Length: 396
Image 1 (tube, rainbow, N blue to C red):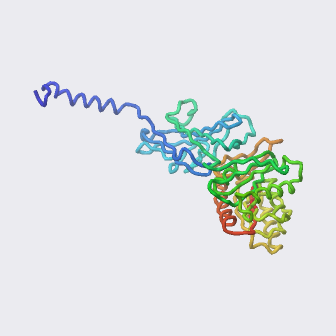
Image 2 (cartoon, helix red, strand yellow):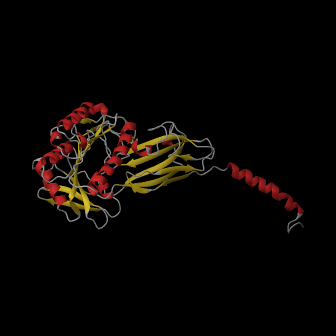
């Protein structure tokens, strides 16, 4: 006997150990996919990490979202694992797919309808009380990845409403809107949120603004029989007089057609204090006596850019004008990581222009500067109007 085993048993152990080592070494590895955080606001970044892959393995990282109008949207990048068997989407290069290069959030901003979808789709959140659910998955190989079952997947929640934000229906004085109140005791700075010519009550930007500390009311100003200016001024007074709103710290955020209303409120109303606007009309610029920030897609707005600068200068208000210029961004600049739409089907097919990567960069940069401006002027200053002009966005 040797150590409690016979000599023959002890001689067999190295052979058994060698067999087990070889068996384990050829077993297929199980990839590990992690996404952090799995629950966040839509303007917050996440990190996608794939581990335990064979070194040098081609894999596809894919995002898939089933929208509220029953359409599927996807984005994907082609990656190759490093010598340690890892793919880090935040740091590694995508060699193809719906985006290329080092793009930490390409899985969101490059989303497009899956092959076979109808033309003219636009992805917009309707029910902000529920999250946007995105399935992140990894697939072996590159070409034909949709035909293969995912190696691993993680479900991610992207929210417009932070925990504690209150959603309040407004139906008074012929006004139809939704007010979002931030969590906490308040009172808070206020924003009137005006959208474009498509009409309807669009809530997701207001919900996100409330998640950043602003009491924001989205308004269906086309769904009322009153003139747009009168209707919007009534809505402005509703939010200004709300007990959870600081009455002299209220702004207006205008989009497309809503930007015209915002500019008119800024110039003609006696109650408006702060305005943010995106539009392409120059009707009231000489009347503005407020701090103004304009966003421009230079491919679309160069003439407007020069006219605005000239008109503000002639009125002696050039010192109030700041401009953000985004070549190639297009008309629809929304909160960060929203997909790009060159066109969409409204009453007719609308051409919005722009290119996907410049559009994504413009959204991320402009949103950060919008929030910074609003924090500066609505939290610390009085009697200011903020106009952000990008052919798409205006804030008062």
